[in-house]
Image (cartoon, rainbow, N blue to C red; front, side):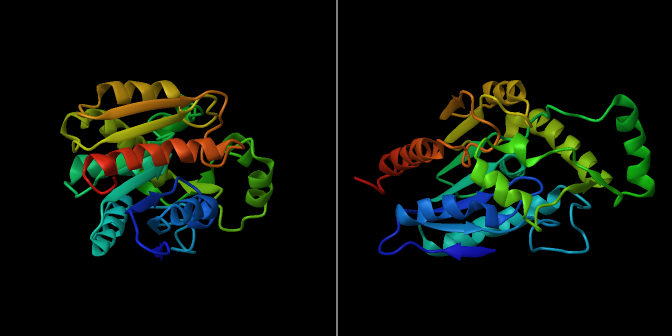
Length: 267
């Protein structure tokens, strides 16, 4: 876990949860945008990704490992005694949803970026069936994810950096896949018990990784008092890495600062 503090008086704390295969190092631009806008930022690498482990890369025993990890990050954010906002991208969005379904946390709001609630590319029915058996016999067996940097963003600069990123995980274990599938199902099944917090869901309009129809379906079912959905037409999966990411950040900041004003932290 890392912390980046803004200079001067902070408005709030932003806790960022990254997606599958990636790590905190890919969020340098977003972290600096929040920090320079008057926010403290907390972020870490999820278990089996980034700098957390060299021996279990791309593997988890349970999706709960992610939930417990992010809960620790949020609790660490409380030390600043400021409103805390959770920002989850892709699988990090799914982790955020599952956390809100299992826990009750002191959060001022949540932002989900192309949350992983359904996949565009899935294994064949045959592979899906045998994965259940492999999960019991050899759960740590890793296989190519089939995802490429070109699927994630149209930003050529980000693509070039990613192609040389040694921390980027390209193989995921069978157990990881089975846990992901289960978590996506639970996100729908347990929607009725999700913590009621203000939420902004932003979805890439030309997502090559996450099924945007599943995201919209989940959003429509979510029993939240305050919720907003924004689709970014023609954007690829990583909306905070797209060529027009400045407008995505500004839209997100407006959402957060609107809620800060509502609760009396901004005039």
